Structures are given as structure tokens and as C-alpha cells.
Image 1 (cartoon, rainbow, N blue to C red):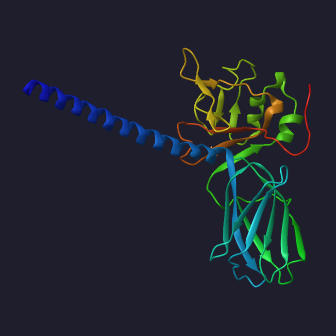
Image 2 (image 1 turned 45 degrees about the vertical axis):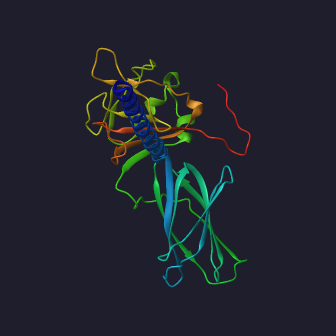
Image 3 (image 1 turned 60 degrees about the horizontal axis):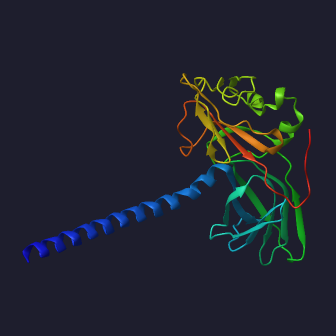
Length: 273
């Protein structure tokens, strides 16, 4: 009888251990899934700023609509008590900002270009008047980045599709950025990237991200890092060569090349070569 009770007790202990292990596995899985969205911080940008009236006083409770010019997708946000607003995790592209507030004319600002991993600051001023009146502002001038200490240079789609490339190798255009020397002209997917030197870093220490995913691979028999992907020129929207970057990137002694692919728009488009 004592042996039977001992066996039952042992079985209960084993079941409790399995349950405890399952709980730990479930908690680890939940934490992992919660961490996945942070990858989007690398491939997207943000628009933020402050809304004021003509006298310089802040306007709280104003409706700020951030509209993607290519897809017409709108992101509505509201200014807080200090007149500030934030629209995070926006895909790189062209944007229009519409501001509405009681007692003020509607403000419509067009031509805002948001680059990959850019935090752009906007200062918006509302004029007193009826809401049916609209003040249009075109933002075509270069914007000084005052929202972060990161530095880098964007190679946009116009340069990628119009500049001559040997064997359609997009990595050749990285050398257009400040502080970059070297750069292999070969088309081998492993070696086309490994000789870049950014800001004095050693060759092969440049990080490569494609849509937020690392595409760098260690070259066989060397300590250098090459490219595991050779993107088609027609697929690339733009890329940014980061020379001074935040801790979210890390793992590199040189620079970071942050490349994003094109996404869909409301207009029919295509290419051939």
C-alpha cells in the first residue's frame, strides 16, 4: 500500500513539473511575440511637431490627419495639452498633413517627404477663421533633422533607377554617401558588399538590413561580412547609409545600410529592362 501511495505521489510531482515547464514556455513565447513589432522601428519613419496659432500660443485638441499621398491612407492624431502630436511607424514616402481646430482655418501642408528611419519635426501655424477656409502650404525645401542625433544619407529611388550601374548592382551607389570609400564592383552576391569602409570602420563590418531583416552573411574563410541578397534595382524604394545611429541597430563597427523595398500604390505601375 505504501508503494502505491509513493508511486502516486511521484506521478503528481512529475505532472506539476510539466505544468510548471509549460507555463515558463508560454511566458517566454508571449514575451518573444511582444518583441517582434519593434523591428518596424527600423524600416518606418515618424512625423511629429507642434501646432500653434498666429500669436505663438499652442493649440491643444487639434485634429491632425497624416495622409499617405500614394495610397490615401490617413492616420488621425490629436494634439495634446502642449499642442504636440506624434504619428509613428509610417512607411517611407510622400505625405500630406491636414490640421483642423475650432475657430481656425483648415491647414493643408503638402509635399512632405519621409525617408526610411527618419523622425521629421513639423511646426504648424493656424490662422484664425472659419473651418471651411483652407490654407495650403507646399513643403518642398530640405528639412533639418532636429528630432534626433542620428546622421545618414538617403539614396532615393530617382538615383537608383536613373544612375548608371554595372550589372545592375545597387551596392555601387552606397559610395555616393559621405564617409564611404571602397566598394566592390563584382556581382557575386557574397562579395558585392564586403569591401565597403564607412567612417573608418574595417571592411566587412557594415551591417545590411533589408526591410528590417539582417541580410549580412559571414564570408567563408574570412572575417569579413558580405551580402546574402542581391536586390533587384526595380524592387528598391530607397536605402539610407547610417553613419551615426541609435542603439537599436548595434552589432557593427562600421555603418548601417538600411534598405527598403517598394510597396503598393493606388496607381498602376511597372517596369522592364
